[in-house]
Length: 507
Image (tube, rainbow, N blue to C red; front, side, top):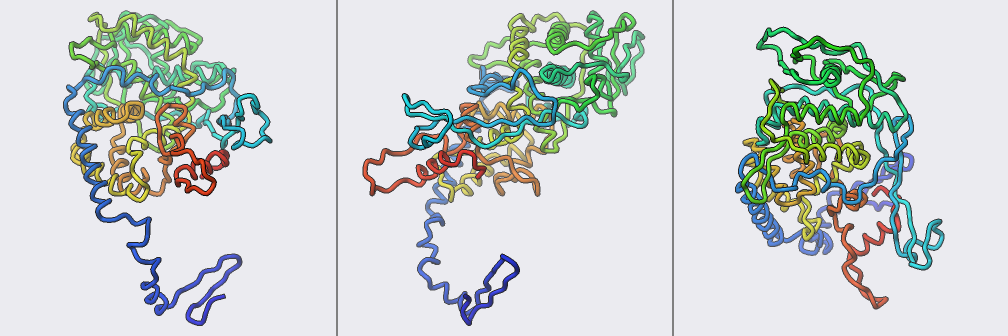
């Protein structure tokens, strides 16, 4: 009950108490309200130490990034497989519905999990406990519109003309391969639609038209590109159902013209995902879309087929976060024979295709990618009440790079810090929306990416286990062994125990 110096109002089950001015003034003398007694308020010394330690840490990574020549990257740092430490694959057969549901399975000591668990191994004193339900989006209403833009972020990524001139075309290729693979897993057939480009055998040129010279290409490759490069998507599921989450089309603002030396040969059936993979290899071989060897020790250029594959994997994330794919103007004119596209590159493309179901798991679950990318700023030894000065040091160090839109230096700084995380930042910038730079600023100030949009930044122990990249203190083993019953338990171990006992909780 409220005393005489306060007023209480009640509405249903909601009750609030208004403290009088006299109580507010007297409360200042309460010992527990003194800042010096509040353990959650860090001291100025701790704040300064955290900020200057953060500055030194990020300045070191920034200096390392500045020493890497433009266009070159740490060897194997952009290998897509570094993200697949323990990522499970999508099932070979998928339901024909919007969502796929699943639960992670955790192995716990039997005394923590309890003996009521259905799946336990009494010999090893372990039990398997299911975690919270995870939703994977399998379908989308409309294809993602990709725009051809002069300000695409990939221009600032230092990837070279081999990538910028082919990225838009190759993203469309990978988009089809991923999409059709998912349809095949659902048991759904694909057909060509009436929307398509038509090959042009004339020699006319126009400055308002982007010419793609496919002289020497097979009829199957020409017909496939006529479908996937159409302003309106040139293929659909035969059942006229919804589209896979990677389905894309190029903006109608850009007119593409496919130049060939012979008239079109009609081909009735679109390629399967494996056939399309071989057509992609033919396209890369035709225009020599490999990566040149370099004399720089421990460094390598990014290959166009790899860059486009990484960009395509984040298409569902872009769609989920309302980002706009912005791709550089394609420029493929005349077959090339420089020998940069080698048999090893063909093997890489086929490997990506063969392991597509593993890449799908992360790609079609945007919260996974969200928890990964923002873990780039996590520092294990920073207490929760010192996160603000730590993030302030990050922004203070990176703000000049962000302001000047030096995307290449930014992602190389991230690569110097955490390669398994940074590869997703590279993918996001390859897909071209510079708004991501503003995300970094806002996250450092608000710990959220977009205004009034919620956040995908909270750490996820499931994703950490999948990728082998730690995101929070929950991913470490417990701090100590507690031999005495009356001993103090660290707060981190207490929270780890709570997590183990509530694996199906969401908070």
